[in-house]
Amino acid sequence: HHGNLPPDIQILAVTAIPPPPSSPPPSSTSSSSTSSSGANTFHARESCIGKRYVYTIQEGQGDPMTARYRWNIGRGNTKRLNVDRMNDAAQRLLGEHDFASFGVLEDGDDRPTTKRMRRLEVSRIVTVDPIEAASVGCVIDTNHVTTTNTTTNTTTRRDTVVTIVAECDRYLYNMMRMICGTLVQVGLGRLSPDDVTTLLERRGG
Image (tube, rainbow, N blue to C red):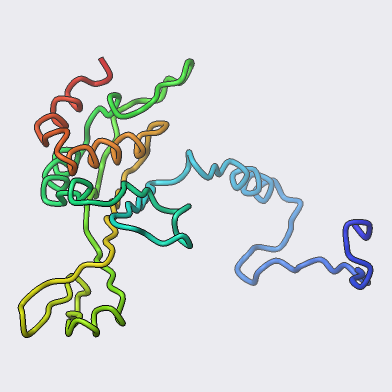
């Protein structure tokens, strides 16, 4: 609408976009009507066969430019996540399970709580200030995992980011938030991998 545009921008013409070449031409036959009706049944959530979530957790001082997109768990050695323990716990959630303990069940929602977790992996990415690394004689390895001083054999770490990647056929409401929060508690030593198995077996009870 012209009223919503700045004065130096005007709409002079409107042209319909033709359908892509692969689309069948419009038809008044009953088969075309059925096809059109079928296309309208697609639902972005209910029709998909799986989803992928990537949660990012910041260790260290972080970056103000990415703070709103990452969960910053704070600074200090007590805030370093044990990724091996987190992956141990994550392995227990792979496969087909009743995830009722890791979701919010809304009133009237009768959808099954059994889901198939195809992938759940935890990994750490270490990022280093290249100027600081060079000043202490460190060399960044090809995997960007550590920076090692070749003379003193010391390691400098600037910031680390831990990612949790999940692929599942379907999710309960808040399911991934609860799973990620639980895995972080395992990484901080507040829960054990066996505790995750216990939570899973409760099935929301």
